[in-house]
Length: 291
Ligand code: GRG
Image: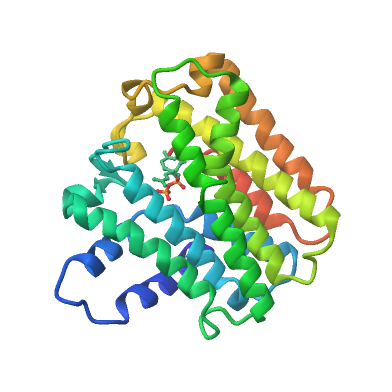
């Protein structure tokens, strides 16, 4: 996982720092919001899926970087006063605190556009034009009004309201799960197995369950961790009147659900032949994560 993290960070550093700044804060704010203490889970998911499908890493770099750029944009916008209004992200002042609200809005906009620009670039993304189009479509669908942005809208609408477990699960599968699934699917697109329904279902089942378990755990850490460990304020769910898995189920039942969901993710991998050690390692890392 460290190798994947370093690989995507080097790639992103080259991308973001190869051009001179234009005499304003935009590029610096983009670098600030991307080249920091992120865990790079989604890029690791792209690369680890590529491992089981025998895809060379060079054909996955743009996909790995693009999903991280979309994720970073979502964090910058999510932290804005009109959204979750957070001061701390990845252990540092949020983008709008370090720069300004206007710069943070533009930074998110720019990171989002850049994600699609690199997917469609023949030099940066050395795969066939059909595969490029399929990746652009996959990521746009996951990030947009049927995926992450929908999840964010559902999240905002659910504040200070009672939601059911099903509604909470749907909200998070859009808000968080969609990008996990897109990470796996983009590696599938780069492979020779894109039309294999068994492999597709198994990998997407893994990603869906991993994303859900990750989110349940995120809700648990928001109660049990501390600001310094988490790199962002704990207790923010309660402060914003958000429904959470521990809130609906109780802490110990939520922990149990996280564990069984991780197990379901791993069970999906058993349907596929190939070296699944990295996908397993990624799930294991998430089970023990503290931030
Ligand atoms: C503003 C359009 C828009 C969308 C925002 C994903 C999202 C939607 C907001 C992020 C806020 C949040 C707490 C989402 C839950 C998913 C989650 C735990 C994100 C943090 O992901 P990590 O832990 O973060 O992978 P790092 O910093 O390690 O990359």
